[in-house]
Structure formats: structure tokens, C-alpha cells
Image (cartoon, rainbow, N blue to C red; front, side, top):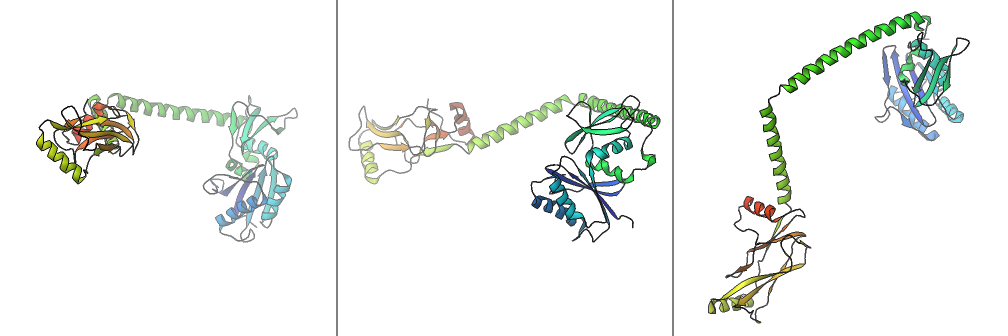
Length: 353
């Protein structure tokens, strides 16, 4: 009975992955929730992994299709390996293979050895191995620490296991020829890449300098506009909008009766100092000459936001109802920043310094 489907399952002590093999040239890693491999800790995780495989092939049981399954395991708890085997044992054929057993064959099939190279370090499923020729001229595999010149082999490269024949195992002469051919092709690819890079570098050098400056100027202007727009939204006018009727009436009478009467600001904070929302930041007092009438209460000015305060009002001959008394700016604002902002807002006021 010919195998219709072939898959490779890779299992370590904490990861699982699977590869679909249509033929020697069509090999696909089956993604698990967008990842090449999944972490596992329990039998429930193994059940979930097997369910992903069934969903991929749209089957309820491995008996529904003719499938050849090979489990490649490394540093795996035998109890869990056996549990995985039980979940897929209904498949047409199931092979369970230790990593150290298959890597020598795969290494030879891939032509990784030559006359000078009798030992290689391989990384497979995040594990490291050394494949070498022993005294008996046999190729063997052992676990190893991570070393230099590690050959990283993905699980999908082990698909050649399904197609190993005598012609797959390269002789040393053939390996040497293939290596020379590979080096020649590699040099040609490098030469083409260098030519393309040099062409691109030459074009970049010939780029119009004026155009670059203009582009940079536009970017800088846009950045400044964006920065100003952000800061503009963080600045607030402090405006006095309400005066009690009696107080305003009395003030008007006093102003009418005395040309020397005026309103003056008594600030509790200097320009640029930090204030908190709700705090009294100053008072506006009606004065006649050098003194303030006791019958007219001072107007309390409170901060409507937290930030740095900048005063727009110091004194006036008219009652300040509806006037902008101050600006609450950002933590980084200076007097010049506020004056620039007022100009952009088309306001006549400027910070009183």
C-alpha cells in the first residue's frame, strides 16, 4: 500500500513540531498558532498538538487516510514519548527514531563530509550533536556542547530520510566535486550582489543634494508644526468671567468718582513657576491711589490646570471681567514659547515681564 501522506514529528523534552512531506521537493512546516513549534508540559498539551495535525489534514482519525509518521525524538521522557505514540498508532506506519540514529545518514546524504572534514557539529531542534568518523570508518553521532561552525539543520531537512537510497549517500569524490561547484556558484552570487550594491551606492552618491536639503527642511518644519500643535493643546487661558453685582456696581461708582482708581494684580507665583489646578495663584484688587478700598473684596484667581503660569495682566483702568489674566503652559514652556503661541493664536496679549 503506497503512502499517501508523510509527516515528521520532532519531539524534545519541552517542544513539539511537525513537517508535512508531499515529495522530496515539497516540504512544509505545519504552523501551530503561527509558530513553528509549540511548548508542551503535559499529556493535555500532546493531545492539543495531535489535534492540530488532525485539523490540518481534516480527519477525525489517522485511520481515515494512509499516512506514514516518523517521530524524531531528543532528550524526551519515554513516558510522554509513548503517550504520543499511542495517539497516532492508528496511522498506516509509525516509526520512532532517536536523533543520534538518523543524523549520520542525513549528514552523509547532505554531503556535509569531505576528505578534510571528518567531524561536524550539528544543531537540530535546539540540541547540539557531533557527527564524526570513528576508528572503524563508521559515522556515529553523540551529544555535544555548542561549538564553532555549527551546522543548523531544521527538522524539514530530515525529510530526506524518506528518500535515502544508495545514490543518496555521496562518495568523497562526489562530495568534493559538489563542494567545488557550490563554491563556484557562491562566488558568482557574491560578485553579482557586489555589483548591485556598487550600482546602488553610485546612484545614492549622485542624488541631488538640494533635494535632500529641501526634504530635510520640510521634515523639520512638519516636526515643529506637530510639536507646536501638541503643545498648543496643553496650554490654557486663565480668564476672569464673573463679578458680583454689588461689588461691580460699587467698583464702577468708585471708578467714576476717582480717575486715579485702577485694578492691579497681586501674583503669588512668578512667570514660569509651577502651579496646581485649583490653587489660588493671585488676586486682582481695586485701588485708589496707593490704597485699596476695604469695601471691595479682592478677586481671587485660581489655576484651571496644572503647569507653568505666565501672566498677561498686571493692571488696568477697567474691570477685568472677560480678560485673559494668565496662561497655564506645559512643563517645558518658557516666556518666548508662550509669546510665540499667542502670536499663532492671533492674540494681542503678551507675557508681562
